[in-house]
Length: 160
Image (cartoon, rainbow, N blue to C red; front, side, top):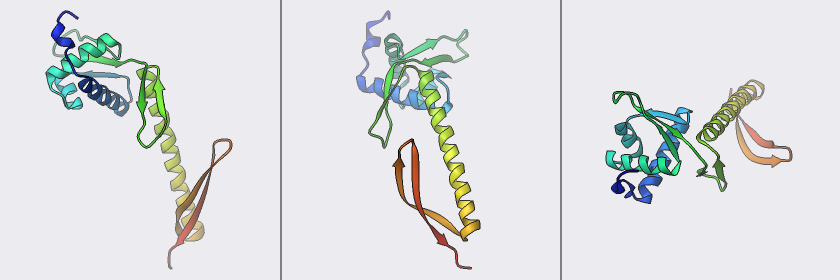
């Protein structure tokens, strides 16, 4: 880095940039973002100057890699690198990822599992409606050995 003033960026700004960058990568399903500084500033809720400084510092630290565009009309590409840790909301666990690609792969896996579970719930609701003439309500959930889950539910019968 050629200018010393660029290093003058708060830890809070760096953390805000990191959080927003990780969330945007998870949202897009890629460890690469092709964006301009204006777009990064909007994503992160920071000024363009703060984003410039954060990009310089985090590139130097290895958190992201900047791949410059051939033209100023084309946005630079930023690649999420690693390793880093992420606190998952509503969880007591902390997950560590070796790279941005690892994070994106894990998120894709979680989304696929959520879709599978959503489909199963819809099937169960349809089956209970046909069989019992009502909708189901889960009243208890237990984790069993072997990654099995036991659901105890009641059927709310519809008056006919």
